Amino acid sequence: AQTVTQSQPEMSVQEAETVTLSCTYDTSESDYYLFWYKQPPSRQMILVIRQEAYKQQNATENRFSVNFQKAAKSFSLKISDSQLGDAAMYFCAYRKLHTGANSKLTFGKGITLSVRP
Amino acid sequence: DAGVIQSPRHEVTEMGQEVTLRCKPISGHDYLFWYRQTMMRGLELLIYFNNNVPIDDSGMPEDRFSAKMPNASFSTLKIQPSEPRDSAVYFCASSRTWTEAFFGQGTRLTVV
Image: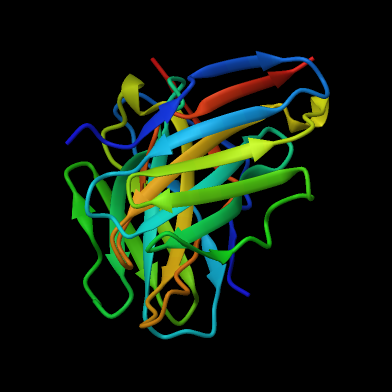
């Protein structure tokens, strides 16, 4: 079974600084997607970034980028120039590519990020 | 597109009562997921559907929980009878095959 592990329950960063959130996963599959979601206090789940496992290039979305290490099964999120609005809970998620209907989306337990002004 | 629509946003009910949560997925999406979020257990997958067919309900905690998807535009999650430990935020999400899921705003359920 696929598992997603976020070992740090909380992190804090100074405004304008850079922070990295860690995620590891366990799978025997070779083709899959990885995602980072953000959940602000409004509780809405918002997709931040996604990475296809077959792509070697790390995904980037503005101030958000990932460090995808397939062999190590590691998928960390880097937030540059942190802003107060980045304060939220962040979830790492895994979804395997499957030609059949079996396509579960599995989440880690999340990490709470606070941003200090 | 209006996104995934869940109703109600908040539900307060008494222990023993039946609770029905509703979800309208994004048109064209063939997967629908029901998740439960609590402080202790995080985001748990309860059940998911593909083309209206339940694929995996192994996350449904017990027989008091049931979910249906009678058509491509509607799903329900029912708890009967409800218990205080069912208090949580319940999310519905939908997706196309293999891609990211889009979430509704969730239903905060409180069972007293």
